[in-house]
Image (cartoon, rainbow, N blue to C red; front, side, top):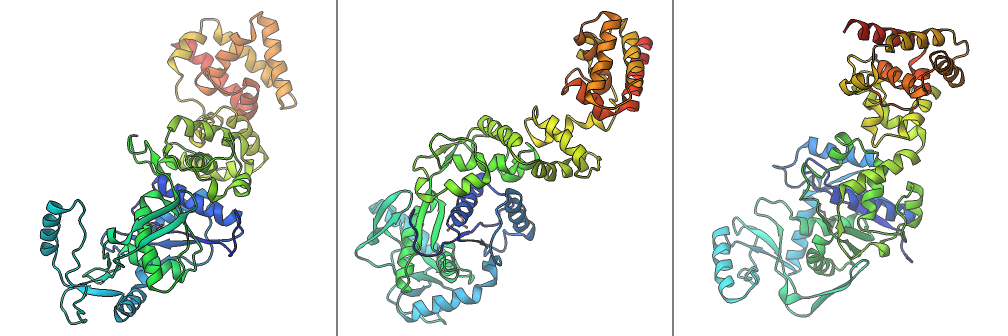
Length: 466
Ligand code: GLU
């Protein structure tokens, strides 16, 4: 897309306590748009609903964005700190005859709405106070916008194309509530102007609001930003649990690259490509390639994309994400070559970060018990002798590398006349606790010589005494 001005976009969440995937995608679209065009990505917290918002909920936004790797530019703007500014601008619009005070009570408004429903099939404020010129001492009141009565509001949406609505169909919406708080509709325009936002990319549920907002820009004598409304994501409400970033991070152990790659494709495409590095996304992303059609959420696909990313990201990134998970399991590790080797082994098979960690805990701890199915398949009467021969051969290994470990297994196979599987599977069960693991020679290498011998002996004793 050709862009004239330096791009400044913003992500403007309300702190709800979790980062819904739809919001996460809006953040990602804006971040990619900014990074693609060499512009700035601003974070604004829409926290004017003081009763509902807590600082913990604000922290969730910071944490989710940081985890997703969506770094923002400059200071965070908090709407709750700007109440004076909203009042100043509302006063200015009242003085210019572009807004007015309204003292209609909630009950009166309800009654009017009901009456309207009976005659016309839409309900909006009947403009009782519009020409009353009520002053600041009129008692409890709201401030409303004086919507033009004639003409049309039109804008050229980057995604949806041209969208038009008659002013006559728009309401004299409330700018300041009776408790003095600004509405979203008003604050969003004041703030987007203050932040010099050039492009607003957000969910399609805001298309109708856009007409109100553009009317406000005109009343303020300002040029509106360019809008782009991304399609809905269907199927999110059907799934169990909360469709939030936190859920996918904690419960499913996804990589941020996996989640990002999946959600970006739920509303944007680049040919038939499915898997992108972050650098590729920055290079390819643009707002005019955002789809018009709704995306359909598919958790299985999300898991698949995540698996591809597990194999694609750098070992540094992988280490950064798994270290805290190991820590939670009581394993303290540093990032070194040994960990890189472990991650290389684990990421080939794992579906997510949690699995990388839980499936490799055997390296740090001997099994507390043996998997029953593995025991009944692989632990027989003669197994203790096989395990002990293996222990003896392993104890004789001089250079601790996979080739020597393999040679030890081969010697046992030759001595006993058993096929390799008949040695490897009992050995796996003895060392890991279950007959499923990465390659047995690698497993033994990681567990280490002394510990392997101990585990083989313990399993031999277990079989003999059961
Ligand atoms: N706080 C609004 C929301 O989360 C922001 C909408 C906008 O981007 O204008 O939906």
